[in-house]
Image (cartoon, rainbow, N blue to C red; front, side):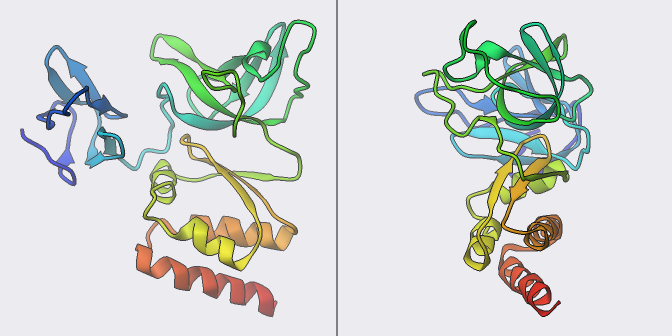
Length: 233
C-alpha cells in the first residue's frame, strides 16, 4: 500500500515512502527495511518526524529500545566496570563507567544504586542487551549523565512522551510561564521533574499526565486551571 502520514497501518503492510533528496530516510520504531521494501512491524498510525524520520505511532506500554534514543533509567546494580540500569524494557541496559565525561580508570564517576541516569542508547537489538552512553561523539556529556538529587521520576505512556516532545506542543512552555521547574523526558516513557516544593512537583506531574487526550488549544487553559486549584488550596 502507498501509506502517507496519518494512515492506519498493520503488521505486514508494505509502505512506499517518498525519496529523500541527497540521502536516505530514517526508519523509526514500527518500520523495518526488507531488501528494497519498507515493512510495518506493529499496528498504529504512520507518522513523520523531523529530518525525514518515519515511525509508527502506537499506544504500546512496554518500551522497545531503539538505537539513538535518549532514555531515563534507574541504576539497579554495579558489577565490575558496568552498571545495570532499568529503562522499562524487557531487559535491563548496561552502561560502562568509561561512558561518562572525563571518566578514566583512575577517575571513576560516583554512581550509586538508585541514581537516575539520562543516557543515549548506543546498542539496541533484539539479539543483544541495550547499552547506554552518557557522552556525545565529542566526549561531552551535554544534557546526559546522572541527574541531581531532589527530583521525582514517574512513568507515562510512550504516546504521551512523543506528544509533549513535539515542537508544536505548548505544554512545557506554558508550565514554564506559571512556575519554575526542571524536566527531563525519556523516549522510554519516563519523566523526571524537579521543582521548589512537593506541591509544585505534583502539579507538574498531573499537568503532564492529563495532557494526553487534550488538543494543543486546550492545554494552556488546563494548565492555568491546575495552577489556580493549587493556589486556592
